[in-house]
Image (cartoon, rainbow, N blue to C red; front, side):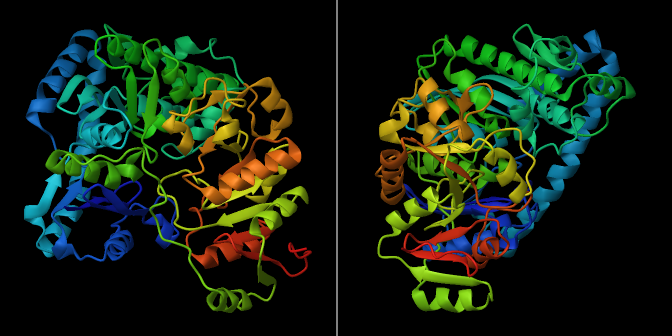
Length: 569
């Protein structure tokens, strides 16, 4: 069974499944080099089909999870009750609800029409399966999890007129326990704080999470509750001066209230409020279902501190966050739902190495390097030793290895790595990358050392393999690897198993033997506001521009600027 998943909105892309195999997945931005490209994913579709050696005519199903439409069974009573509640309690909010619905219809119909035209043009209409947006995120997360059953939570700005769902899912059951409208949106709440603090919503929320650790999380909680809060177990937005269900339009009252406060305190209060609301919902529902597992999907769960708090909830034993958790992951999410419902196929915490490969031979790399007047390259007989010596010599290293990762996290294949004992690197490396970050760089650690670094880590924490949650760090780790520990004592690790990446696992073990550091810095291989490097030329440009000092290609070739010392000794 061949299933093609497509999304053409915030981060367009495509995914191809063949029975229980994820053949390929990629975002359009990696080909067009336009960050978070909102377009038709023509290049991504061509790529995944080519990887599978198939054509559009060979497909059994085409899954679309961006916009399935307004479903009366799911949504009608939810909105009737929500409008009635607003009319009774806060009638001044009714125009905001109407605008939310109107705006959502206009955007979704345009994108849906683009998809429908594609299906019609290639004779695929009978193969199309429309998957509810939040079922894509949620059931997709379960299908890709290692669990037999789970409480499944989705949360984002909005999709198919919802912003949050909570369900119980097992091999024989999918039961929705709670839905919330796109008016009562924690995604919009956090995105609005992002814009109020001078950043771009739906992109820079991670900066708010990092900034929050520097502020007082309690002092401004009353202000946050004026925006959105819990009422009788339901999320309720207070539409008006303090909140509107969109990333735009801010009242003078709200602008003045935020401007009067330290940004770190605003961020801290927003982060604490988000954590309080979602952990309350999880704690309530986990006590009522026969499971201790939680699956998380949707853009809000890009918030790694929130995910740590959910793991710590009473009654929760383990969590799985589908790695491309936001709408950029919808091609995988929706295709996985179709493969599960049509063929009962599951994908146990799959690798995200699903994008284009980097395989290149000596002649091709030599020709490419010769097109730069400033670069040299060599093939190393001992690539691990060369890499370790370069780290000891304080070189910033770009990794360009195998298949590119699908999703927002670089996981050692398109990563920049460095030693972890220099806390000043958070300033100078961010400047080199033209980034303005409040969080430290993330660590990458071999599994055999993880328990001594991250409090509560267990080998069955699949989420830690994809950098989707934080842990409190041990004092020993904080002392030896200060560059990757945040001011609140946490870190967001990628924990590497031998079976996932033997080469990198060996590098990490050898680095620990040499230095006592149980981690290397791992940050995505890109400049600020650029997609992660895609082609070999993208990676070589980074060397020529001084973004990295040394480039490792396919675990055997090294490229460096010709005015630098050769890495091979």
